[in-house]
Image 1: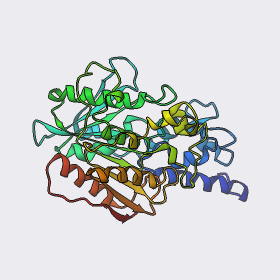
Image 2: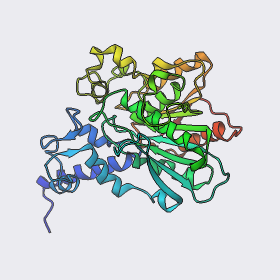
Image 3: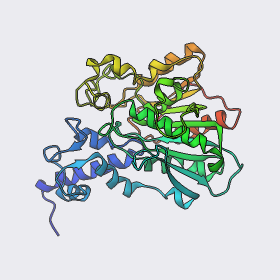
Length: 371
């Protein structure tokens, strides 16, 4: 046994803190700890950035042994240890489909169908993963959708989309809309009620959920991916968990990241520093597409979010409400970038879906809840 000395005790403590932070971050990808250590925001942790981390932990996470930890390696390592029971065990089947008519694994959607249905046609819940548009996986949708699918009241779907390292904006919204068109076009096959579709996502996925929700009647955002170009991509309602809504105002409040920097997730998505490409950036802002015909939205955001400031949800809510569109905010007092602990938050999410997809008589108003 190697004794714990004053020299090697600190790396051990760092490892435990790193693990606890990542385990707590159940919705955002990559983890908050990864983003904190990624000082230059390049989507990977170099040897210098890992100088205080335990060698054993680095080797365990570094899948290809190149001495650098990518966001994908970070996600893969910790999700394999924190992932709950797989949805495949509680659903009749999980099937994966290419919505783009090609062999790109990023342009696929996972469909989850319940073991026992309450109806032959069920509302569809679509999850869009986070990861700063540069990492993450549709696999994370399994844990977000599992309880809903198991209930027999919903079909679930988790969308994969091209990341910014492969394609820049508007590829991501084109992919999401193509996936939705594919699901609707195959509604009979999947047992979906194509008139009852909700979308929700976290962080970058929250941004894409906002974009999907407010742009159902915006032809220029449809793209030309897949075979179902005449199918509508409009949804019934949407939820954004701490998603950006106006990139140009993300530095309004200090945080852990300079969003205006050339290597920020937003600048990498646009292809240029966002403040030097304001016109192009505005086309990626959900705020730019709001109109009176938009469906209801719910925003869930922590007041202490260090990566996407709370005001981002306020911005879009304030644009919707004067138009008569529901845009309530669940403010998580003291909440950060995900990892919310209060079960009431998921309960409000469930009530929102029941209200708009099942006609339940719930009333959801803006409110503040503790973390």
